[in-house]
Image (tube, helix red, strand yellow):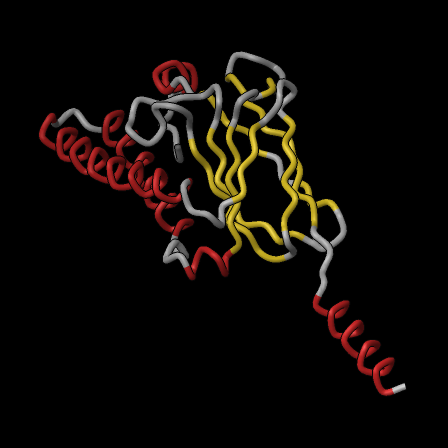
Length: 195
């Protein structure tokens, strides 16, 4: 009888620590400013890491690093289109190049972390990852939309934070936008904000 009670207690403890994986799914697309609908971003890359694993691997600031890059990209774009002073444009270019190099190295190391889950968008732009429940950083790299900097020469980037629920499906879509700054400025008569 004692062995049965111990066996039942072990079973209850084991089952209480077992959590069912959740599923993170979504659609990765891109939007051209000249097209009316989104197109599938086939070959887009998706990388997910739990916030706890990111902190333990000293990558807990991944959202800040990507955010700083995006702000720098926006600032550089505004400097180019708002400034006629070649010195200020050169200064903005140098700063953006430095931030791009640092961010590119950071992303390269991030993608190689053992705790990172990886997926690719299929021909229709769909992806799926099976993950333990919890909060995740999700890094998207476009398979189609590219920019002229060291971070985005192989695909533009974006990062999001999502809470993956147990035993269910969590949806997270990504839309990359193709901007033609000169054309949009000419057509709208105003400067673009953001990146």
